[in-house]
Image (cartoon, rainbow, N blue to C red):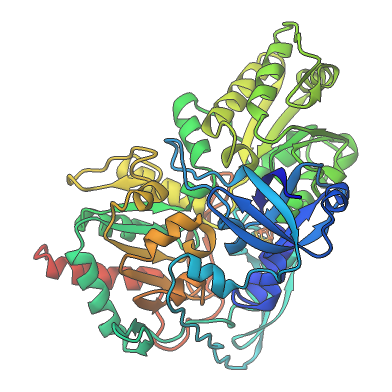
Length: 576
Ligand code: SF4
């Protein structure tokens, strides 16, 4: 008998590790993401043996089931990836952010095998996916040790890694978490090393030289009426600045992955401001840390050893810090906490409002709010107002479902009001490597942090209109340039279906699902390993990332590729 559940999606260590070490076409990645975690009681009630069919209003998918008592009854957790995205909702409700959490689904046991990737891609309208991963040849040479290397995976940008090399081969990495380690160690695997253009009739990739690939890409962009430039969070700000210029000369629209992670945060900060903090200040000053709707133990693993455990100038390490986790399930981070508060999915807004009431000494009449007993709310407020220095780290649990940007407005107001009692600050746990830098670069060039369009010759941003998912759902764009990103693996199904109808240019160092469906595929060097540049850490600190080795022969960095593409587009549009 199928039963009603709430679906949430998110990162796991194995999802991140397998996509970096083995690639998104691998069995390891499929096993990591074609998987639903459910409470053992729900598994028993439904009579699930191995697999379950999960159905939302947008589609259905069969996945393996892992019983996990940390997931509360009534909830299903699926790691982000193509399987989850068959079920997610493209509706952004005027925010630009699709609904990736708190989705109503039905679950029923099945003896069917998990849905294969090929069947999911067929659902997306992918007729043929070409996948030709190559291993970058590595010249073996003398031994070198490079210190203070910034990690090129997540927004934490840990800049204390030591990398040992023998020529171009990386032999040892110190201080990286398992995901960062997998990314750097395997930088030579699953590579695109030759430019390719898709054959118009049989859909096979034809290898071409860079000049031919750039000419075809320039033709597509110059003839498009309203092209979309998307991605940009895994490249440097120097490349992002060039991408903005390209959007302006093509009178298109440029968006970065903020649209799918902390877009609502950025909107709320623009509305009501925010008291922010750097990681160093948090480590030195904070005696109370709240992790709300985020799980750094799976997504920003070094964050705990960097900020929570060490001794700071005014706090003697973990033993003097109170750690509070607020989440819909007992995450790995919750297991480290002194206090875990389980909130009902999609009810964070109600809990923030109750906390603000308690802070002002108003009575809370309801015995519990958002599944949290009233006494617990008073207790939490007491801890917060008597803290010497507090920080709330928050994640996509607040941005991707429920009240979206209204959640963020509430948490910002809570922090503002807490500052009447004590010192409190706020920091979003940004996911992608340089997503913070993409916001900064777009902001200083256009006045807007993401979803910026140039159709009238000047920049304009309307969340829910000029943001990628909305543009795709409304079929408003007529070509796409994807830079260092994999929307086919991470957008809701309906948005991918519409992306598939467009001519697509992809610039990426690695084979991704999006690279496999490109019309023009241009290989690039890996920023932070083969190409240097500037990136921004999640706390807005700018860092120079290093070039450890040269890019492969005939492969350019994103900045060089985009400069050449801009010249060609300008020529075709008679702007040069
Ligand atoms: S926490 Fe993030 S930046 Fe730091 S090593 Fe891990 S993946 Fe890299």
